[in-house]
Image 1 (tube, one colour):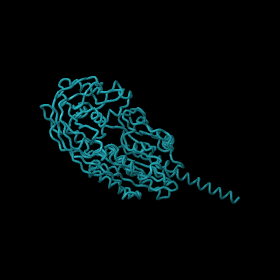
Image 2: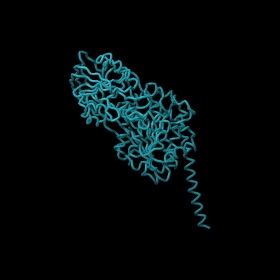
Image 3: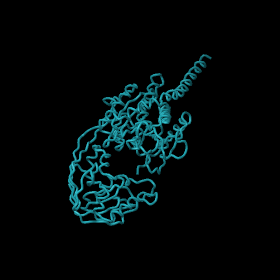
Image 4: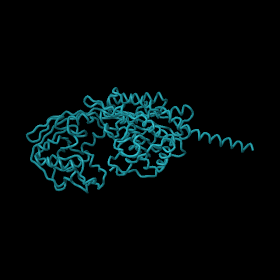
Length: 522
């Protein structure tokens, strides 16, 4: 009887411990409050942070603040770093332009044209011919260069790609191909075809001066080594090609605005062109902020909670506050870290190590997370999941179905691991009862949201991910993305849902399976 009694006591102890852990998940989720989120976000998206543009003093101020909050919460800094910040190198570009001449006309830098970042450091070109090459695409399914000799000439192209109705011609899909957004790819092709330079008309740019203000002067050091494969890329105002091709240009612009195929249109002119410019580059840096809570019996496995803390900085006299993008995610990661730290302090620490990372450089091209994935502080093979929070504080005005005050877009939960979706849905059903919307998770999502935030650099290395998102609103990437527009009631509910998902994954018996294929970024 004594042995049976002892076994019963042990059974009851572990059963109660298990139930206690489960009950505690909600207890600590409730410490994530509207007031706590607002307190954090009001500092992160304040004027004093200067828009947090990567490589600027504003970004450095934000990094220092996040580090202070990680320290205050009791997080530990990674042993391989000098502190909580993982620095990575950047190149700061300064362009010293001279006048662009095409024929008898002179064009001024900053008013009529700009030289695209990534172009050669110092360059001069002279050419006697200008030729139109549609969208600048050379693909097996659609080729703007067919029948055109561009060697030694300046090539004029439009940004974007052709489509008929909702279907893009290059890939026969409703989703854009890489040609639709990669100017670098078009520049490489122009170089291969023997062009002297690429004159680009971007019909979405109505003012070159404003476009320059909104263009970062930073690049990754690797870009310096890739410019040999490219030609000088000069973005011009639409009236510049009207000056070159006359009335024909008006017709071409109208067709390009409609996405009409342009490969069969011929426009060429004998016109002398010349541009001389010099690019000066200085080395600077940016950083990711990383802190962790060590696990217990599974401490060598890792659960990541990420967000990007950078935004667009100051353009002209306007601050781009980035309250939702991604101040909301950054504030949530800080408050979730506080909740998990409080739980551990009170005897409910995680089995797996929880890593909290706020990345910079996301707005520039996922730079910070790319650097982390190339230089991981914790082994990616032992990283069971990345739960990435990028914009969870607003309402999608285009969501005209369901309960707009009780939803979250969930992306990636059915990719890479068959374990993720059951956990996601069960945590929501048990605790938060949000409408889980998979609109942006669709394979044919025209916005390609799955590929556009920091989680993707984890996914590319095989780490299962979930990306949490609220949608695109009218203040996206505008100075009007401010704290007063945030719905803190809904933000609280979303942050608690993410916290509870992380709690489950941090304490389950096994790592998430990696049994599904990574979607292709075409």
